[in-house]
Length: 330
Image (cartoon, rainbow, N blue to C red; front, side):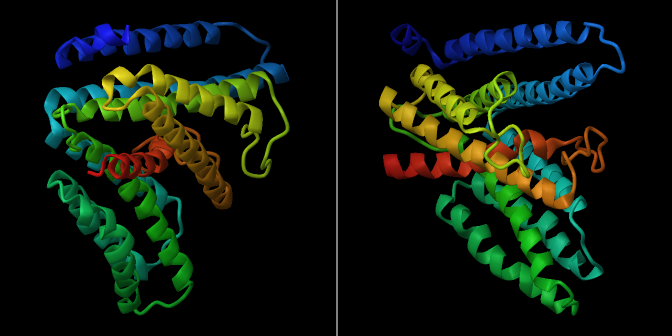
């Protein structure tokens, strides 16, 4: 099968993936919709639990549909449009993060710098393929610049906490997300202009890991590892999710520049980073006293819980991107 698909042109491979992925998503979405049609007594505790489970699963489905759509848009409209698209996603994700984090008047300059200077500059650097500068711009230069701007605002109250929250938001929402379009622009010998497949590979394996982990954790519950952070994070379901993501990556070897063993290793790294990053973001939400960045679907930022849908990708993308560059010496 892989040999057959490798013999296809890039456009034919895209068409095959389109049919398979959107076909699977359509089947799963139809199944989930049919399940919601079942009637339960309103005062039935089991029905309430099922309704909560259904909302969470719909959230995963929306994420899968969104990321698959972004892949096709990136492929069809080109690298520049895809980079701008991911910059917009990063903007709303950061806006969501900041809206649910307390700020003071002295933070206004830093916020303007973050949204209207740092974010567009980071994605412009990505689009210019200046990968060496791209990898250090935020962790080094912005890390130093933000507290200086904040200090000049003459507001020292909770200075460390305020700056740490802003820096953390920029690292996750801007730095992490910017690695996704960077994958589009990596050049491999014999793999030119196929960077969208790397994005698809990353998104598919991470989403496979998250969906399998979620479904097994609910279907076969075990003792939570960190119950105050997440009731659904359990070692058995987590390991099964990572293994499923690794298997999915191995099956997708034909669309990557990797050999099967390399694809397995890269998929496992992405799944580990994404699933553990998702756990970290849950800890941040518990610290803020919320259950979702979109306040359970009631949007406070106009993004409707966008960060809940891309948080795993924000952690997986940097690990995947730098692992690929290091391994292939790019």
